[in-house]
Length: 174
Length: 384
View 1 (cartoon, rainbow over the protein chains, first blue to last red):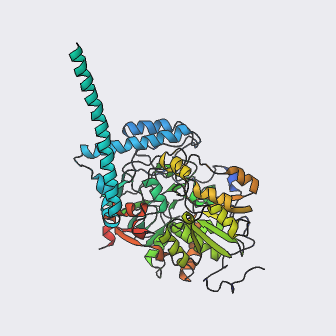
View 2: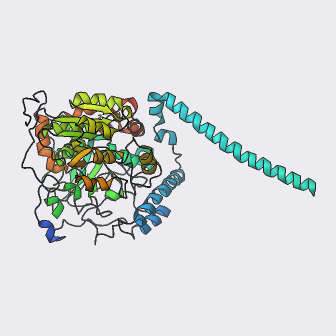
View 3: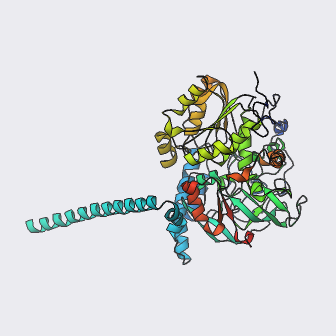
């Protein structure tokens, strides 16, 4: 038996949007057939391009409006331009973009320093919030980080000592 | 002006930026009075979305006051308080005419698979977002909606994304009266999806997550069942058992690419990024729904590939419906629901943070510290 609003009287508005005729529902709900006209709608005025905008090769033009934040620049920009030679269906598009994002992080730090700003990476990572709400976790992370760094240095120095020792041995034998 | 500034994965700061300009006759400049950090902003913050550039300002959930309008804007005036949907939509293309405002073809040159979204990488159009004092809003006659006088602005800011996305998740589920609806994810969108499922006549609503404080919240807020998948051996088996070995009628993925719960998915999707995020929730949704059932996806994934049991989709005859929320289409109905007290979004706000402390706000939300469910950012100019 179909449930009724009485069964759910404790829930304000139960079933108020139920509509047995709501098929197909969204996203096909308001299908108009206009899409058979393809791209032939009346386009909004075109925004003037004042910075470099990369556009997908799956469309013929720029959209009528677009964002102008952070235009491509530097090495990351070169990689992004390369990526846009490939369609959105290709790894050749997305993987270089991810690489460009990581390169861009380094460029960001260099840019900060070039402008006389030393980035406070701890503050940017929200460590103040960690200190307030997750002190034990923060301390644990710092201890693990310091221990890992110490191990790496110890390993490198061990290799150096061995190299020096090897050289000394070589010198003596000569 | 002050704005959030992305510096790299897990690194953001508040910094000065130039005041935005009118770049198109249909633009408006909005002075932001509140903005939110969305769960999908965390995908950007974690470095999962390709073409997220250093220096960009995030933020697609914001409201504010119209400061300037372009020469062709007719529906807004300077001084109007507006809800700005997260979709940048022209209102003229074939997709917008069908109400597919999340799929506008005149707002994102960088990708054809998604329309323009404020502050959501160049893959979504390269627009600076609303986690700032001011923001440029294109197509100002189409998206922005004037906030009714009676509406609390904390409710209004949640109408820009989280409420419509949760509601549309339930709508796309094609819920029939009496259906059992399982929502994967007790984040803000999952909470709203659970609440909305009742409006469509669900007979039973079950939420699955692993954060106890969120499960406690959703159980009370959405008057639903809530279970921790860490306490069960296999969530799919749990759903089968609790539905008389049948499967749920409708499953909703309200998590997306940051899902926990599977080591394989986490390592390949979130750590190594060799798939477009961790598809654990979607995997469970497909396997938990009944034969012939419906899976509704509003969780956000990256643009490449994901490991999901597509063979089961075929063999079970599942219908999958998915889309970015079409905010403008849903606003009139959702405003009605808030006025009638059927939805009360502002109750999910747990943190109000000055924009200057945006780094801490992101970290608190990302690391799920201090029982955070929904943080909102208040710019300095809105606090005066």
